[in-house]
Length: 169
Figure 1 (cartoon, rainbow, N blue to C red):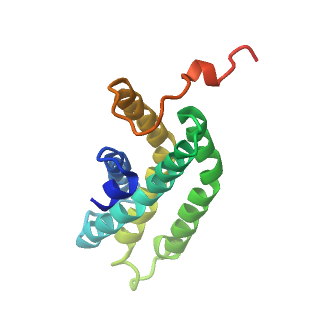
Figure 2 (figure 1 turned 90 degrees about the horizontal axis):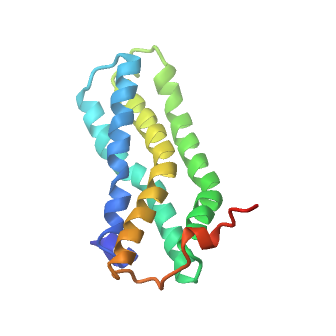
Figure 3 (figure 1 turned 60 degrees about the vertical axis):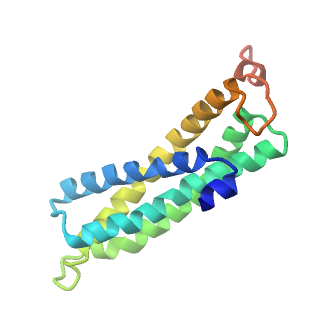
């Protein structure tokens, strides 16, 4: 309800939460690659990861909404969000993964209990970030088009994609 209030939409928080399955795919992939078991620490890391991976989508959707509120059309606001917010999103992800690398690469018995957690968060975050940067703008556009056709959007109608992008150049 907090996100629905902030976005003034009941659907946009669902778009943001769509990133959580991306993280789960990354967790499973990471555990398979490293041969680690799905342990209690992995389950705890999945819960923590669910809170972390939504941040990338929050940043993108919020930026698009701010651009659209200022009168920028949907297509350009999605492109601007991807271009302007790409660096902060990538830097946040890379620094988080780098923080877990000593645990992931360690062969010490003192870190063996935390290794599944570190692998889960690192792989889940990496996978979710890459997919978020591609899928969330597409999903936002699809949902916005659907609600626009139904006349249920809070943004004024904007030019179509063909009018925004000159195909002759």
